[in-house]
Image (tube, rainbow, N blue to C red):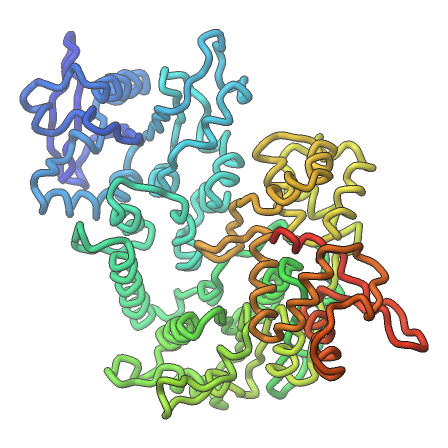
Length: 604
């Protein structure tokens, strides 16, 4: 049942009418942020009170707009749901996505966006309100469910539609444009859909999760007080149950790509020679192959692996693709659990089932389909290679990685040592982008192309960023958000204080993991922490090197300490993480040159 509002003719008041969901008349729906203590409730509307509250203006606005669109009825969550009735509230929240889907019009009322009074046509004057628009609180459900959405400022001025503002919405929320245009939500991975609400803040922490119910097509009883973490776990459990039931009934409907954490990156640039090299090793042989990509944090290893996965899928639509995040033993375990459900392996519902073992046996079988497993972010080899000290019966996770001849494994890691341990001799070093590729990446990521008109400034910027993909994407995001030119960004980089701040500036990227800090500074900090754990002397060297000129550093300048073997290993560690490159050989030894980005580590 849905309860709708209707204007009372000739009076500034409203009445409520109830309908079966399937028999509801055409109606409009309002998306808005609540004002504490100022919203008109269901009981107040019945009593004819609440007209003095600020929220009453929104009811009046929605009624007037619905009338202008020839709609007699409209719906607002604050007064169309009796929130004192827990059963009704739970039913409403579980039904809300469907109600938004069925609405003829959706009005997004942005109470924090005010258009200057002198602006008559707000749609033609983006500059007057776009900054506030970008800071507004967004509602993922409301952006995806309705077909027609109009955005209004607090003073009722039309800002645009979902269609006209789709690029701004994508840039702010990270929701793919294809999803905004109506692509089936099941085409997007669970991880990606979860990421769409990562930035959302709600009064009740649980609502951040409950708003996802319709996006995943699941139903849950509400349990306010359980907290976000437990609500997330309940949601994930229900998603897995639904996926399992669905694959049992219609296994052919489950798209192979749904096991990938992100949709294909439409802005991917270059790396053709590396993609060809991976294909020749991974896909062109009849025996099991393992390969590792290593390189500096932010150089694009995961992006390269993701692009290769989609190309592998394009060459064989029946190939199974599995993505295993190796940031922790827990993330590996969860990934294997999803694989087990996807493959419908017998015995996975048993209480004491060893899911990792079942997955290994299934994919190592001669009867399995062709498959590709990408083990991403294997930066700490101990996660995969060491025993669980708390369980003497355990075996290293690497032993659960399948070896069937029908499949192949592709690792990504920052460490050359880890790459060698995981894949033996089949290692691909991912170096800096070429200038042409870097320029194209910057262009693809920049919304206002006129910002790139100064070719000399663009070249200067790319060289300053050492053609590092993550740094380029981060720079483009900052320029997009603040509408500044390349020259202005370069001038900010030239000051030590603002340079550090720029590289610590957070930005959203739908092709990265949910709730991860993806700044250049954070990426290098993680690499430095890995080095500290692995080789303290190497960390001391890097801390020293970051404070002096970046080129031609004689070994005699390095801080004393350690034997010659330890010295050699420390330099090898830094080379393995791509922070050092060997410049030349001399009679007395070798000079070392830092990778040019290592100078940023003084503040990372």
